[in-house]
Image (cartoon, rainbow, N blue to C red; front, side, top):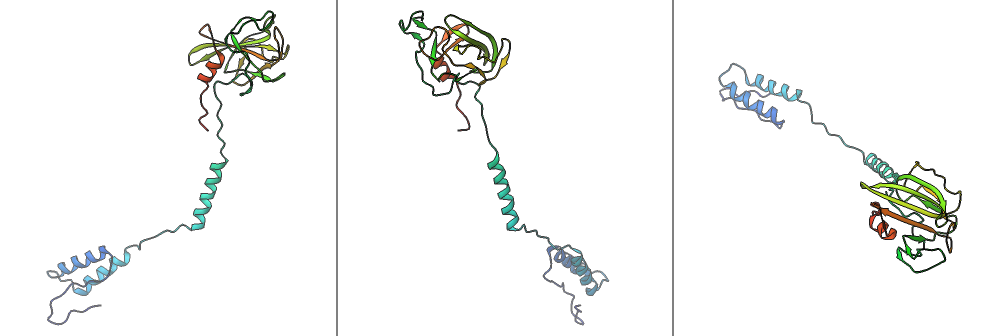
Length: 228
């Protein structure tokens, strides 16, 4: 301990201590002048307070642990598969050849209409004909012109849309009237029943009760895939 020299005025004792200890030293020194506390007692009090103050704590995360956590998160991210299903799609495999389009087409065969109310799609015999959107089957039947066909009613953005799939292979429709079907669900197989010149799917669309060009409507309403 420091002892004051005989006859010397007491002085504050400074040391390299934390800020709280230094403040306590200054307070003790200033208080000593008018109090019977000796310089030694004041210094002891400061040293006790400094000893009781907890040392600062630091934490270090090993680099290997950080690398392992990063690798694990990256693996989990890469394992997530994002799938997206369009609410509207083509009734056959996309990219299938398109034959007679919508509108006037002349006299293409005996019994064929000269004004085509749909579009002819050529995915091949036995290819699946698929629901172009969620909907309810309204008819599964056959007649002389369409041959075997399926009709579906859809509600698309609050608008009534009806789709027709004709010239199917007889007996290939796995659905019944009143059944709910999902977009892309197989509702029959492409054939050549009815009045045809070749195997194809005759596909019609009515929107609000009126026929529209199916190719134009599909290209306008099928949304872009947001995952691409």
